[in-house]
Amino acid sequence: MATEAHAAEGATGYIIHHLTPLSAGSGFWTLHLDTLFFSAVLGGLFVWFFKMAAERATAGVPGLVQNFAEMMIEFVDTQVKDSFHGKSKLIAPLGLTIFCWVFLFNFMDLFPVDILPLVGSLMGIEYLRVVPSTDLNATFAMSISVFCLIIFYSIKIKGPWGFAKELMFQPFGPWLLPFNLLLKLVEEIAKPISLALRLFGNLYAGELIFILIALLPWYIQPVLSFPWAIFHILIITLQAFIFMVLTIVYLSMAHEDH
Amino acid sequence: MSINATLIGQMITFALLVWFTMKYIWPPLFDSLEERRKKIAEGLAAAERGHEDMLLAEKKAKGVLKDAKAQSSEIVSLAQKRANEIVEESKDTAKKEGERLILAAKAQIEQEIQQAKEGLRQEVAALALSAAEQILCAEIDQAKHQDIISKVSNQL
Image (tube, rainbow over all chains, first blue to last red; front, side, top):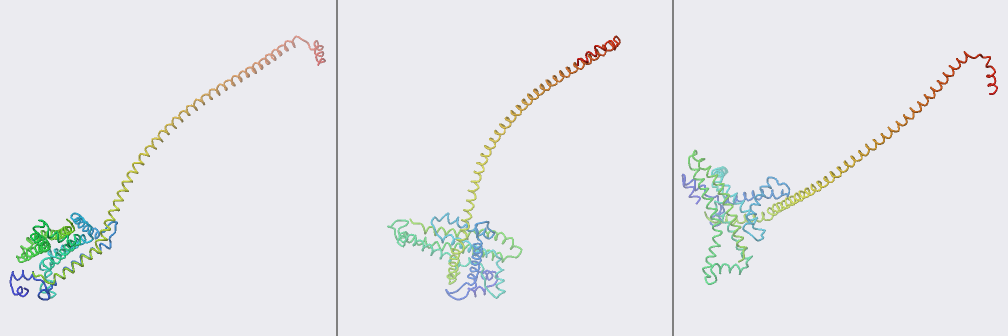
């Protein structure tokens, strides 16, 4: 794909160039270095900020950093309490991590499309795709992890037999067992796929539109990219929020014993 | 757009982030929130209690004030009564004193009158005597009466 993109000229070449990741290795063992790098840096940023807040945390008058961190904690905690009624040490921190990480992924989208690739090319890096959530690997990594947690908790709470019964005998009773199984399997598998593809699709499309706007003459660009960026602030937050809330909902469904 | 080993790397990163958040970020922040919530609740309760105490104290103060007012008015009326009494007493005393003074003055006047009377009487007697003397002197020769005088002086 990389050589194809390189060969193509003009607008198509520009677009493909922007959507080609910096990769190393071949076949399945290809690594998208830019995705790994940016997601690690953004994850580090998130952890660093909240760790700083956690270290300074007092029950007295909070500082600015603590205030913000607590606002996020309260926000996530409210979401968790709204849909999850059990006790779990995992779900709320998981939700916080997902929200912040996805938000930071998406936020990379608001950087002008050419700036970071330009910096990269000055350092000799030919391809650079800066938004990790436009990489299916990044979105699927999260949704598959969530899926594993769903399965894990389903089995842990309901027991292996309980989980199997739920797969086989619901929603239509034991006489339609194969149909039930098929329906349930599709339902379960649809969860991670829809999670990952929703985020990926939104951000990929958003990035594509930024790239298309960047192809226009310079005097039209601000007129279009400014409103789109403002709209995008809403989208990136919304997508992070949706990913978090759905994760919480799926996990609370896994905790519910019928 | 291919799924590849990046997925595994991302999953590891994700797992690490979630683990770190769960272990080191969520608990202290959440605890501090809880603690503050508790503190605020306690503060509000204390404020409520303080308010109630204040109302009670106000009520009490009103009672005390009322008592004090009653007491003070009692004291004032007593004082007034006492003052009246004192005035009456002093009036009495003054009256008595006046009467006494008048009596004394009257007695003195009487005495002085008596003295004056006495004086006058003596003066009149002296005058009469001298008048009598002069008359007698004119009438009587010393030699004639030498006998009588010497008789009297002999009797002394």
